[in-house]
Image (cartoon, rainbow, N blue to C red; front, top):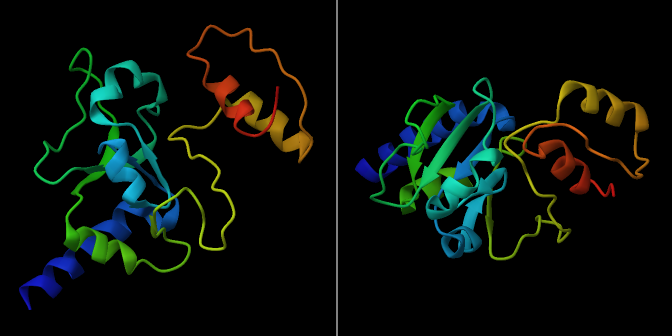
Length: 170
């Protein structure tokens, strides 16, 4: 009974955190653990790589939740200690958590195990915790499915370039 109550509580928290499948998860577990089992709408940045990959984290307004290894501290370390991301919840990657995650309904997320493929066998598109700038988002919407070449002359972290490249642009 205790186990089913724990799973039900985790499922309820997971549904709230995932915002109906809209929110992504930042998975801070080692890459090997992530490859074995992960949430379908998640991004893996192993905790030890985080200092070099802070630019991949979203703006303060973007809501996401975090998955950590069992027993790990439930927080995102920062360079200065002052950045406050909009983290909706933290989850330990326990067996009860994965059982709860497997109960998510279609469209709310789910669990992938093994290689980076969807249930129908197609390759997964990488997820990002951020969106491109609004202007680029508008241009991409106008372009539809066409891809081409682009030159990023901004002074940012290169997110827009990474976003374009992940969609086939050169």
